[in-house]
Each structure stands twice: as C-alpha cells, then as structure tokens.
Image (cartoon, rainbow, N blue to C red; front, side):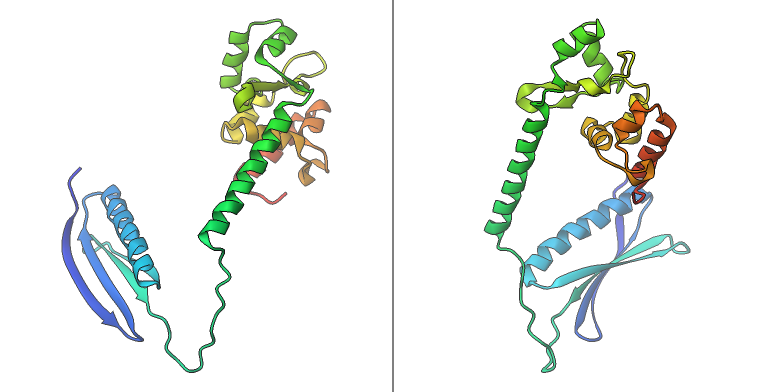
Length: 228
C-alpha cells in the first residue's frame, strides 16, 4: 500500500480566536485516509491534554480534486466578563480508578455466584447427562450448540436448564449464539432476562413453551439495538 502524499500543509487562525490547521492529502485508497485520520486523532488527544482546551475535527471530501481535508479546530476558552465559572464535577483519577476497580470486583463476584449455582454443571457432569463425552460437549459449546459460560477458576459451566423436555439442548441455541455475537454470556443474559416483546417472559420460559419463533425474533431485535 502506497504511503499517503500530503499535497498541502497550512496553518491559519480563524475568526473568534479559533486556530485551525488543515491537512489536504491526496490518497490512493480509503484505508490510507483512515490511517491519516487516526494519526491526526492521536495528535489531537496529545494537543488537547497539553493546552487544556477542547479540539474538534472537520473533514472535507472533494471528489473533483480527489483529496480530503482534515482540519483539527482548537477551541479557545471564551474571555468575557459575561461568562460564568463552571464547576468541575469530574472525579479525580484516583477516585475514578477506585470506582472502576470496585465495579470489576462486583462483576467478578457476580460471575462466581452464577457459575457456583446448583443449576450449573461441569463439562463432565453435563456430558454424562447427555450420554456423551467431555470432548463432544466442548466441541458443541464451541459451535454454539450448547451453552457453556466461562467461570474462570471453575472453568466452563453448563446450565442444566438448557435441555428441553426430551433431554436435548434447545434447538434455537445455535441461532441465538449467532445473533448475539457468539457470546455465551450474552446468550445467558438473554435467556434469564424478561423481555417486553415476549410478554414479560424470559427467553428461557418462551423456549420451554415451544415459542422458538418469538425468541429468535426478540434476539434479532436485541442485536439490532431495538428497545425492549
């Protein structure tokens, strides 16, 4: 991939005390422009931290000239007697880190509680229940045919409730995995949560009632970002 060749690099001061620096670049491919834009973004982060002001971008595309102009705009603070002081309500870095650490700890604790539940089976126990081997169970987990959630220290755990009345994993599980990004935890949360589009039922309850079509429609809507 050819390196981008800058055709113009100029600095200018715009009205109202706004400083702008334009980069006009003719690029042979869209990927090159993305690379340059990312570089300008990283430079803007460093610049903003240094000057303590906000920066924004303006991107102009000229198809006739086959060029793109990236203009980072430095927004200077307003110097006016009519301006009001704004209280900084942001959390100090140390407090923010402590809050994030606390949230992560609570998340790990919740995961540990879930995988330690009586309805969670080890791969060996789940394989015995299905009359198959641990290797087969793990292969089916990887392909989304069965639901297995990662419990870190405990390894993968398999909810016993994912089996239908005939003792087989619900047939909708592969489609649910595909729709929800092949994330076992996303599938788990979907199944144990109540959904308005399912008339307040959990995904699991709807499957137990044989309403696979409604369950898959609800999962598809969730994947699109529809409000439930």
